[in-house]
Image (cartoon, rainbow, N blue to C red; front, top):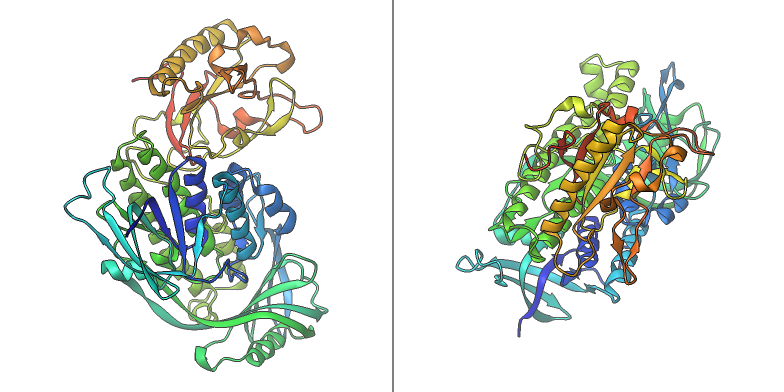
Length: 574
């Protein structure tokens, strides 16, 4: 007999787990099938972008990630000098001010375990069925337009027994060799290069002075990238191997090449945790979905080189994008038409990633730089310029039902771009004088956020305008909130003032920003903030950071922290 589930997630990689956290938080019936016998133990990915750390923060699980990881703060560039190498530049790893969170390094197995822990905490039981390998997926073409239909049939094998699952939706998170993609007849389009690289995680004795920094070395013996790992002494080496055949590469080859590149510095390899060799290829699936019921995510639809640290991050962000949308559809809050935005948003992101990776791969090639006259300074400049993209902060979604830039007055918030993730800035919470990041008020809990920058409400005109906007916000909340649920269940209003905090009285704050919530219907006072000096953390200058117009504005933010719309105050409903 077929087993029935609303969402079947095939694969427990970063995309599937991130989507599962969303579904668990929204009370959706889901199941994960994983062909491995147990959780990932030694993941190959380890770079965690600032945007991914922000996502963990939005799930409330960033603390362990930040505590256990290596924080990448600086990059050292080294170039050839005679028969050896010399340091040429230092630069910040991440553009200052780009994010309040750092770029960190942590093994993917540990990153995944944090997502699993949160998923199971919310679901209150294990949700991954290990040792279950998906073989095929089929969509019933006669029923897929019926929103209530369990029209996707998935065949899997577990302990030698065939299993049949019927679901409303399937997420293909089953990696680069995706059985679902092949079952649907989708192809990966792209090519491989002749470039071969080796990678190894090691503990080493060395007199190289920057061994605990992120390092890029361009020597006459080849290229080497050093990434410090979590802990005190483990590092990862990415080593250019030229025209070697992957199947012929040995660990001794990697060690010998690394030693030559580091000359005149010495290195002794004490222990190798893991190593591999790979050829670089960039491929993109020719389709990302089938009948609006099966969606490809992560490596199932895009593959590329590992050096830019994009793979695990972009895959996780695929899951972050589709998870809340599936939940909104299954809860009856949105039409299934919104799922089209997963394809339009993430397919373009993946295509941009492939283009970027092709350029980045060439940039790391010794022969390409020599043929095109790219100097060490040129390389450093290109690397720094790409920093916003490699941090995961360069993605901009185009206009859709969920992104509305065309009617936006850009002067309302000069540094806020509709279609990009909402940046953070320090503010002071009104109720308790606590300095905090505004992004902390926008948790990933399926709610839409209406952030109102009301200006200085100590001025009569601003206070009057705030009252009008608050009334319109109240009407909007009333329209979308199900009967009997807390007022902030679907939409929460967040207020940011530009007044002196100690001069503002609670009575000037409209009630819509202090809804009575929870079992005892106690006023929630944690949605009101002031752009003012704090006692111990200085002044966040939030209005300046966002470029807010003196008259203020309203910013509507999606559940995934992407900016949907920007309004002038008092223009709700236009």
